[in-house]
Each structure stands twice: as C-alpha cells, then as structure tokens.
Image (cartoon, rainbow, N blue to C red; front, side, top):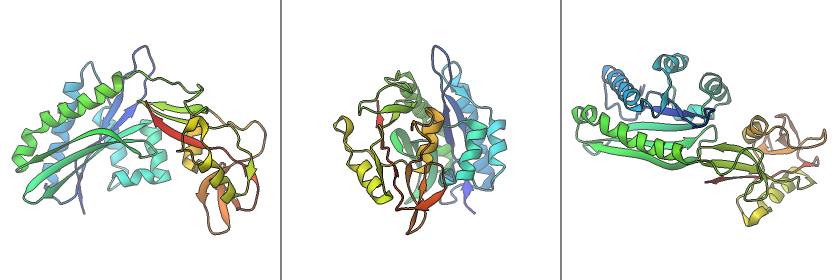
Length: 276
C-alpha cells in the first residue's frame, strides 16, 4: 500500500477586520514508496512543526491533533477521496475546507521530486500557485523542509492579502449573482433562462453569454449545494431546476438530488466561475 506522506493544506475563511486563513496540514502521498513508514511519519511531523512555527502571527494553523482525528477515519486519505460525497461531507464537518494544497512525492530518474498544487474545495479546480523541489536523496529532502515551507507560505500569504472584489449577493461581471467568494475565486449564477427538457437545458446554459462570457454551464448537484450554502435557493417559486448530472440514458438529476425523466421541462439556470 502506498505510503501517505506530504500534506493537504485546507484553507478556511475567518471573520474579522483582517481575514486570516486557517490551514490544516495533512500527510502527503508517496507515489513510489520513496520513504519508509517511519520516515513518512517523521517528515510529516517535522514539516507540520516547521509550518506551525513559521506561521506565528501570519497564518492560523489547525492543531495536528484535529487533523489526525480525520485521517484516522480512513486507511488512505488522498486527493481523489475528496470527490466522494461522504468524505466531502466529513471534511466539511470537521474542517470547513475551501481550498486545498495537495502534495505528492515520487522519483524522476534517480532524483526525488516533491510537488504541491493549489485546488479549490470542493470543486477541486486547480489554481495558480504551488511549488516543487527536486533533490538528490532523503537526507536532502529533510534538509529542504524549511525552504519548501517558506515557498508555500509565501504563495498563501500573497493570496490571503488580496482583498476580495465581490461579496456573496453582489452582481457579478457576467450579470449574475455571486454565491461563492473565497481567496480570489468567485462563482455567479444567472437569472432564470426559462424552462426546457434536460438536453435543451444543458445547451441553453452553455450558450448563455451573460456579460459577454462564454464559460457558463448548467450547475452540477455539488454546485447546487454551493449555491444553497452560499446564497440560498435562487428560484422564486416552488418549482424545480435541472442539474447537469445525468442519472442514466433516460433520467437526469434535479437540483434537489432526485432523478427524473429528461423530457420534463424544468427551470434552467447557468453558472460560471472566475478569478479575481
């Protein structure tokens, strides 16, 4: 079984005059079994300690004990797990995560490589940022922990310092309503585009060009969850709306999660994501 190594950094939104990210350090994934089990544990602890010590006054780090409780519920807790609805719910319950820095370690030729990338959560859309190191051996890996931490924290602090342009409920650049605003990442939903069968609804949403933008689409069930969590249900009447998720050849899911015949005519709403 693969060693679980490096780190997931889950960023939290905090209230106050100055927003500060709350970051949880998770074990990274060792793709090529570069480290022994003991080395993996030691690297995780040294990295966590270094990150916490360097974060004083700048970043709010979740105690490792809290993270360990979550990790211990699964034998392997990797980035791909966050696409699981059950694990997503557990993650949100324990940590309220909104962004993730995921890390992996592996070998390229005879050298060891560490790479970390920033993702939105729970959409798992990769964002600019992250860092990587290529070193000669395990000894150098441990020696480079301070450098790796400094590089990551510099990226996080720069993102944290960027003040948001939009708030939830504001009108977005595409003419929609903002329902997600975190770390310079935003999502907006359109007005009701009408009623249509499922296939027509997907086409209508993708063809919508509010604000002159072409990246609109029909929301998935997970994106409907984000709309309700951030803004509430935007449809004024007691009807229902389509999601982009297909149940089978004849049925698709509505925003409520249940599947129904694609020939029904339900409300169409389009959404889009954009960056500051």
